[in-house]
Length: 426
Image (cartoon, rainbow, N blue to C red):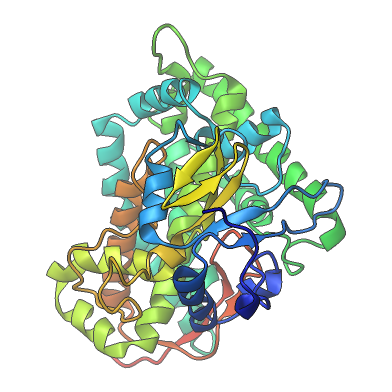
């Protein structure tokens, strides 16, 4: 069986329309439910981007089993043509902005081995140990902000954004003077062209490229410094790690840093901000977790499933292939919609119910089975768990006071702002 366009009954759906992604979650999930039942490989035209030639379109993969099948067969479904871009980009640009995510074996395996060698047990242990100190400091500063003003804070700016950014910058040894710039430029890269974050939507691509160049210059500078004066940080580990006589180039280190900002910073930031909102909307679950620290393991998995911070990754068929009884030609593009897979009733009973005790919970918020599963998943889980315990213990009076300002991005399920206040009640 071949797959073509969306069936007539679903003709109003367009996953390439940024307006679709600005909708409340229940509206998006209603569409995913419909696609999963009626057209699990629905075909869509690619979004129009300034200065980029429109491509042939893509198939939206919305069933868990299909996401898993594609992810676990990298020989048939490649990442190299572009994992984080629907449009085909020049290979060097693809690899620069996608790093490991936009590579295939054997290059992917070698680079991942070099990077993994830098993530030694001692490095990871230092990182995990520092998360608590970072969370405590950020929470203390947020309370001070509230108490010095009228009690109001922004969950994104005051809590969710600083924690992962601090962890990554500490991990890489980024100087304090450069951190505001890192936040600003990473916001541009992850903006998805949102006009609130990019001055002129027509020049979003140029702004994206400029942001990448700015971050690359920072990491190139740090790499040079660490070769001359090694320090106890991940940048030093990356410039010295070696596999089969090969080390990472400055460009590869810069590319990996951008990947950390996308996959590490934004994923955790979104899980924290969206998680606070979810618990505000489900106070029974908030009370349940606050009262039982032992729930943290399953609660973190459920928060990631529920929020699905990264909307999709792309894969491209390397040859004519059959998937779940459907035939596809070589070169076909697939977008793996993780939020849809994470609400598949074939895998998750009552998928639209937030259950912090859900177990088992094979969520794909960190990617599905295969070589591209998130390298930093362990650290992200630790950050989320520690952050929420800090919120419960030190900000028990945190109260969301208004609707979220959602990021108008097709790629990241982010929040720009979430208004809240500290009531003073303990």
